[in-house]
Amino acid sequence: MNITKNTTENTVTLTLSGRLDTVTSTMLSTELDIVFAGGSPNLIFNLAELDYISSAGLRVFLTAQKRVRAQGGEMKVTGANNSVKEIFEVTGFAGIMNIE
Image (cartoon, rainbow, N blue to C red):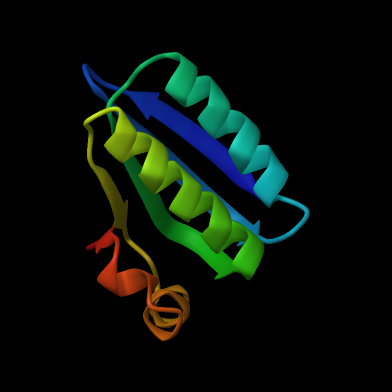
C-alpha cells in the first residue's frame, strides 16, 4: 500500500492505493499518529486507488474517526470503488462514517 499526504490549512488528505490489510494497516496507523500529533482537526481519506480493505483496515478507520471527533474535527472517506464501498456497507461502517 502507498500513502500520499496532502495538507491544507486545517485538513489532511491521505490518498491510499493498493491493499489495506493486516500487514499494511500498521503503516497507516503510524502515519495517522503523525497526523494527529500535528493537530489537524479534519481528515479526508481518498480511496480512489484502494483495491481492498480488511477488518484490520476498518479498525484503523474507526480509531481515526474517534480521534478526529475528540479533536472537534470531521472525517470523510471519498472515492471508494464499489467493492470497497460494499465492505463499508456490509460491516455497518457506512452508517457511522461520512462516506462520499
